[in-house]
Length: 423
Ligand code: ADP
Image 1: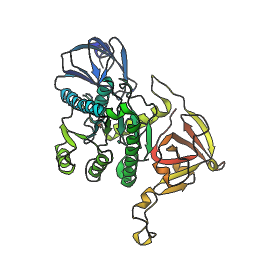
Image 2 (image 1 turned 180 degrees about the horizontal axis):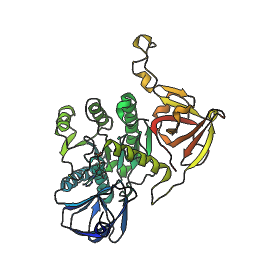
Image 3 (image 1 turned 180 degrees about the vertical axis):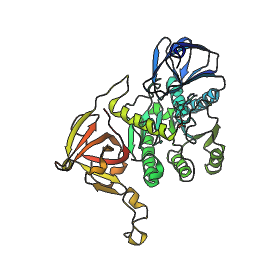
Image 4 (image 1 turned 90 degrees about the vertical axis):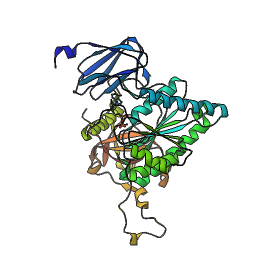
């Protein structure tokens, strides 16, 4: 690294240009200041003169409609100005959704439900963020649904959820996570339990519909749905399932013409399917980068972000005080199935677990369920704890929790996802 790279660099951007940079090195910080003009990061306006901080892992694009001057300080791994971006197309998509919202307002109907699909790393989450930001900047209050269990933006990995968007995403931290609606799935990819995943998608879709019914403003603002990048075979079926469940009006397909053509063929005509180019700026992430970003999300769930630190609690709970369930039992051979039981019913069976060393470092969802019955798996969850110790002698487990003792409920659900607490 040269000293030049560490000192401030100034960039003058023409209208419709984008400055892109990445911060890779650990413990590196990069600072951004808008000196003149107007600019935005994934649809959130930058405040002139304010310093924004980005740390390791950040991949950022600063787009300007009108032209601007930007100062960047610190060591970036890649930094360049792009003249070609799909922002005009994305903004046209927003305009089309906005038109549907205006119509919905007039007739007191539901606004557009739009689902963004495509393979991994094509900018699906980014497009959702841009569309939500533009909507909220127009005074709308849309619902954001994230069905991406591996790399979602709501709660922690292993979940699906919904969030009411009331203000634009913070440039360096994303959308504020106030009162999200979260369902526990417990795996990082839907292929681990398709039956459960489809049940949860139905449940989330119903809850979102109920929320739209009771709030006029949100009803006309509509819903933006992010999906995961698994789109082949079973993944494609999941896309169709989600589209039906949420009764989507629009599907935006990023980057993959094959997926676009399949959807045009299989989706009823009243749903608009549109093809969108991906941005040349979207960065592909390796398997390791994906796993690091999952870790990072979980760490932030307990410890907050550099700007907003949180101090989690650690406490012991007696085994007798909790009911720990795992969803999904080993399959029974067909010949042994009890009368009336379907071959895949085992996938949604609740199995009571006795704490054992196998649950160490695993996340547990704290259920909102009031009754201890089969409905548990369809209830949304209050939050998550992490098992940091299992004591066989004393028959206790130690939990890392965002809230102090006591747990809000004694019904806990086991997640495949693990977190090594290195604090
Ligand atoms: P997907 O949801 O399809 O997996 P993301 O929207 O998460 O893709 O994008 C992958 C990464 O690329 C993210 O880190 C995002 O910040 C980055 N990214 C997206 N668009 C741009 C862009 N125009 N310039 C630079 N980086 C971008």
